[in-house]
Image (cartoon, rainbow, N blue to C red):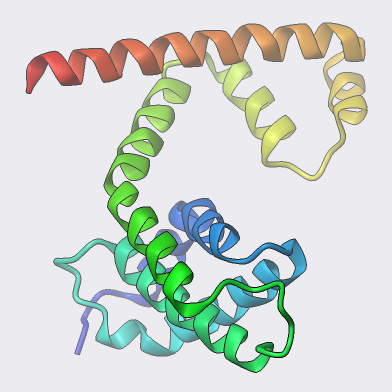
Length: 175
């Protein structure tokens, strides 16, 4: 039985949410279906949490479960011709699974580069990309025009992209 506290489950799920949701999105053509399967996957992950082996990758484990949830969903929806066959689904999932370590690596580099920004810039990114406020509301809150906010975000994205490229290049040179 896994002795990792359940709080870690929530932390890992929050950290890998986009990766798991993106994986499901590559397997299902309709966003509403992918959202439904993601919710179901989260429930199954929670139910199976005690069987998670902490020595393995959480995202690989979660995407493996998500794959079977997609297959279950498609079996139920099998009358609809808009879904991939099991063979195609397996090929796509295999390709995505091989990309998971690289995606996790890029996610870590992104977080590293965001942390290098000043507190105001980090908050701005959080508010604009992860918050519930619209760009207009964030602009009003920060005393900027929408145009000025878009320009600031564009400059921040360029800084983050440069940092990610330099960090990735440095990592390649170090290997």
